[in-house]
Image (cartoon, rainbow, N blue to C red; front, side, top):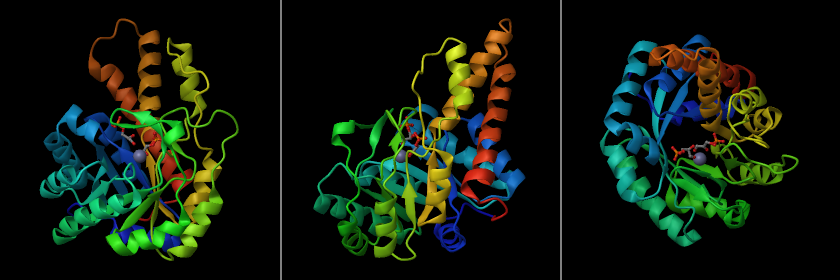
Length: 309
Ligand code: G3H
Ligand code: 13P
Ligand code: ZN
């Protein structure tokens, strides 16, 4: 089976009240860990590549490794551009064989977001590629995605119908209080499910995307802090909130930070216990196994997409 778009995945996920995991990939071990878990659990997959990942690993390498994943697993896998910030970047990904792109023009005013998104949709649809856009702004910091908390804003449900109608976009990322990275909430976690519910009412049957959805497992935060790291107060989205979102209109749940934490905690612990090791396979192998464990847990216990491939 070749790479697929997300159209069929989202249709089934919406009807079935579950979500598809969209995992960020940056290297071979991360791809393999994710794909092994999805294979074990017969889950459809979205592997997503950010602009930072393209710079780090080279988009050709990532694409070829994802193709290897398709070939070895036989799973339905979509290759998605995460947070494309321009028409040119999205076009480049469409031209190089991605099956899905995100145009994130959420930093622009509403009308401009519509215009940029519409331009990407026209080009992508002409090439059989689907498009995700964003309305509202998530807070948080990662390599190429930076929004201060003061500049973040919730999605306004009054805007979603006009946005979807005018752009022709295939899915929509909304801001309901999640944020990127490992420090999502200062106090009690709180998500605006009322906004998600209202958006779902205004766009019946339409797939919604949740970014910043890592749950920041405390077992990994503890290991990182125990073995020389410094992440006090790291906190993610409680899993019961993600399960609730998946049962509503959310069909795609984005997870990156949890994979980073699993890899880093595993490698830190590995060197603390095995200071003489110097073969990268000795620590990248366990890191790959940790990714597999996290993804398997997400698929089975949070997203509910096991057995849906
Ligand atoms: O939402 C952003 C993703 O987690 C990618 O982060 O730009 O550091 O690769 P990155
Ligand atoms: P996390 O930082 O919560 O993993 O979010 C990832 C994301 O939204 C990628 O687009
Ligand atoms: Zn994101």
